[in-house]
Image (cartoon, rainbow, N blue to C red):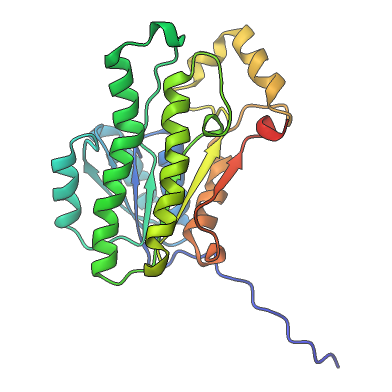
Length: 257
């Protein structure tokens, strides 16, 4: 009989955890919320679009999960602070709300700059800060997950603002990890390639654009939201407790060359 003691597999379960997902009304955010709920978390979905997040929360609850929807504009920092002050601390935050205004850098206006950087970076920073304050006060050892992009690791034509915001998010994430490690709070990013969502689908109707994207994605297909659900569950769970300050690049090989 063998005397080898095998290590126990770390748990991917999120049972007993409270999670918040921003920009959760559609696409990546709604998929991650559904994934968390399937793994046992109680999920709070936030976005400006009340109808969308309510519909997603209702679908999660109908499927046996636990979810609630709260209308919140994460660019309104006073509302963000109030939201977290009024609620119990979360164990998991997904900073997913974001936007893009693709155009050549010569055509970028100050309004474009403010719209992209304020939502993609400033809001993500202060949502995380407000969430972390409650986590620390409650002595919760949790996980921050920021939805970045492959464009936070490379450049791209007509993506100067988006790249600026996502590269900055990567640096912010690393510094968060250093500030929060002593509290047992981890911070990581997920950096996807092009994912087909209601927001991005119209872009793929341009055959030349689609061909240029598929040339870069070595796996040979556009990503889908399911491609990110496992990565998010992993980073939220006990299975990733040694991971902090890094990025999970889910790009089909785009950044490999």
